[in-house]
Image 1 (cartoon, rainbow, N blue to C red):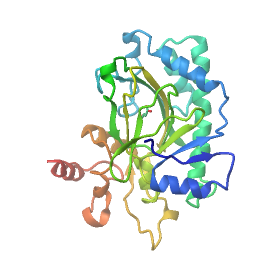
Image 2: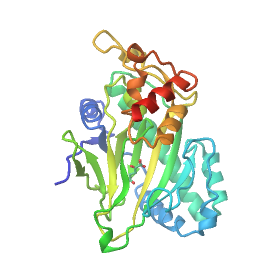
Image 3: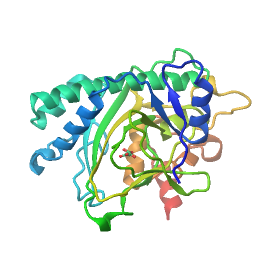
Image 4: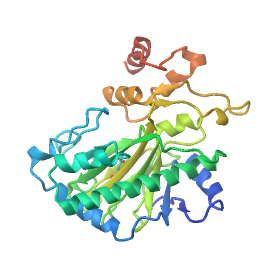
Length: 322
Ligand SMILES: O=C(O)CCC(=O)C(=O)O
């Protein structure tokens, strides 16, 4: 049975604030409707996404983003035989979206749709992130200066025997918020419930899915929950998704928001640099924050990683892992 996911009407605020706060705290996941994206753009972008995966393999490999760890094109050989993914960084910058289009030699039509879609998703993300902050009592909080990323995923499921296979293993997202435009023609996304079982969350046409990530868990001083999720093969049909990530502030520092720290909610984490956190998670192939966040509890470990990851942290982590 599919897991119920809260549906947040973005045109019904402040009435939806409580529902949003509860969904972010309990499930780390919610759907948004009335997001304001041009209605036919979603279908057009999905068609463009499918077509991009048909460009020659040697051209795909030119999609390299060295400014962010693991920010480049992922070929089908890297993360399992089904998964392939393009990366746009920084998706908050139209110049970067154009650079992505130029390097992949896309058509004028593909460029137009990609630019429009990524720009619209930026607007939706700013709206959603602002409302998430508001749901915690922070009115007028701006995420405008934050870095964003976008990915276009293909899960190349083709055969009956692929059904049940893992397309993307269980993980939480290291970033702040993730917006997913799912493939309406086939399901596959699953979320971990309180019993630690993965349960399907079936696509809802026209609604976008939002996941709370590790950075939001730290920023909210533990008030929001990061959602563990994965993708499995549900049918012998290729599945695509368009994913937009709100990453971290431009100065890269993530720390519990001072307004969310008080005597009932003591500070849970030290500040850290998102880029370093992401690098560390990737280097150790960590699927969640679980092994790093305990090291950020100053009282217990006296570890500071405000500017760089200290040898001490790496040592603690390798001790933890072995
Ligand atoms: O493809 C999807 O539906 C989910 C993607 C995802 O989990 C991710 O990009 O972290």
